[in-house]
Length: 290
Image (cartoon, rainbow, N blue to C red):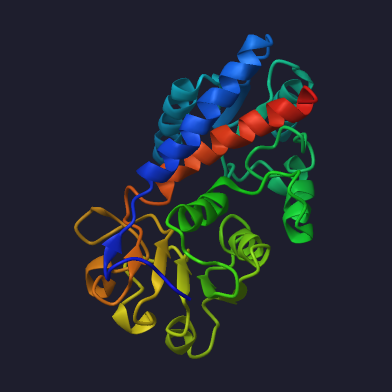
């Protein structure tokens, strides 16, 4: 696989996010001219710090693009029935085109039941099993999760060849690992999924042209996990021993060995809210037969 970067190039998310936003502003302007106003509803239970941080980023990005927003804040002790009712109200509200449910939900709420309640047509972050199935099928009419989509967008923006590339995804969650692997498989890459039980993990990851780290362990990936010249996408968001935000990759340790690497913060996370906005516009167009 050819990579055009010099060694140790930090590839930031902002240029990717800005380019996506620029295109969306034009699309939204066209819709508004026709009297259609794309709108996102964010459903949040309680006020967890990471939810609020993502919410701020999403609201700011939507405002920049011209997408209307509404935050539905529900109490920490909400019942299953009350949550499902709030979701059904949004499903039926024709002014709402996209719904984002912050997860994980509190223990008294059963996600396995709730995921069947959200309208697949409005489910802009792949909560519904219907959208999960569409990723497996390679059906582009659905909505893959925003973070895995951001990973693919970053790789494409920086002209990383995906077709035929040997890619290792470290992590197998339904939120990041599995959907990322499926999206890359749909780009004709050869994908290996690794996890905590993988034998000879360092050997497997060090043979990858592209390594996607999504395991949730601070600075786990050292230089012996990386092939010389590999592209490294760090999806992890952790706090290190000094209380600073860091990824799954020990960036300073792998910097000289990798050809490209995303930073944490300012990497994948900064693209995610643009993908969310893109999905809201896509949902709005589909619901208005555009």
